Image: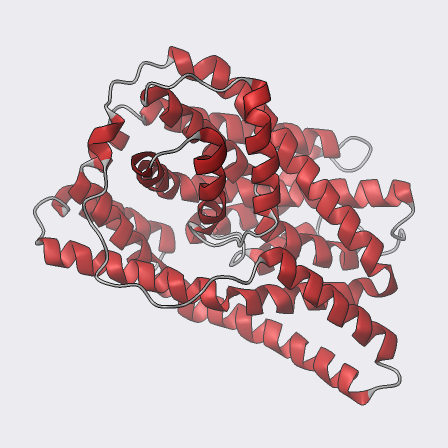
Length: 391
């Protein structure tokens, strides 16, 4: 009963069985609480990202500038490859999966009573740059300026406090956050759609993501460690990600598991905090395949690869402003879907529904993908001479 996956399953079953018969005021109130929850998390997330990034950069010390910008380049490259694979498979397979639904009938009918007036205007890339500048200054002046050493110690303590808060306070109420969205979907009838017409696409998303991550591990294992060893070492983090639906919250477990695979631990302490928020291969594939599906059932033709390119570029840039918590990855991509794929408000609403359904599986693949990505970064940086060979 205290297991998060079990509680999430109960929330889904409860919403499916009783969502349509519960009083509208209860459904709307629960949905409002879910949105208040995500508003609060998004408001305070920049502090968490700053703390993790700062401590990672302190560990990297003088090689920080080259490592950071090289890492961001590799993240964009990896995301772009995953998007291209998803487009190639989706544009080939999805037209052959019969789906019978009128998307205009899926419009949202449940709205929150109110939203918190928090502004989520601090972008992850800005936080990363700020953390880099301050960390670089602390590295250069910690021997001369007492305040720099004091600030470094405070950031280390803050990171420990944040990890404790996420584990002790955030995870216990995560099922309530999911319940609000599930009741909304059940009340609007979208759960029925998910149980029937969307099942083949759901299976396609899971299979493609799994095969892509497996292939990634196979590639990075060449000349390194057995692929079975790499996967088994990361599996505890993947299972944790499945239960939390958050790459950011799973970050401490991901880092611990990654350090069993890599040889240069300071590098992994920089890669994992960054990748947990910006590098999400499962989300890349899931969002793209789901977007292509919604375009098809809306009656519009699937985009050509040339038309797909602006979406790919916008997606990769938007990911630099992402945070790895449940549902947040889609938030930064929605403007890209509207601008480059012509999404309507009804399509946006349904995309949000589909994303929440996929989130557990998506996070599992995100976390597992980050473990393989850390090995890939280490091997690449060693060839470039950017890191040493010691632990």
